[in-house]
Image (cartoon, rainbow, N blue to C red; front, side, top):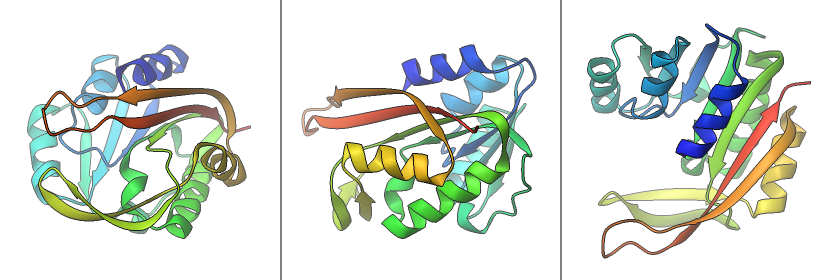
Length: 181
């Protein structure tokens, strides 16, 4: 996640307006973007996470709500970050949201997206002690979905992530860097 964020930071013009989808606590994404002088809008469905993010990263703006219902204006953002938050959406919703996000990014703007690249449709799992339903695509299909949404995929990085707690199982992570043509 940090390496992907580093790549995004290298590619952003000073003072860029960035949408952080599934911003959670605001750390590290919104914090690092804001510290670099970018104007960050974070959105998260959890009121607890949104309140925590606002306290931890007061220089960013955080909105509590479902990103699928967030009013987006064409070209209003210079970049969008979506680190693992697509997993909680059904596959069709992921496609639809990526299309909306592509329109919300100005031409030439950036996308940083990460997922767990496994072929899974609405599978029940436990995440941070809570039952959740997740969906994802295999790596090649996810790259196609992102491209089909309107982003040119310029770089991809696949890593095997191993959580630092003893119950954690290694899982693949896929990071894509893209640009809206």
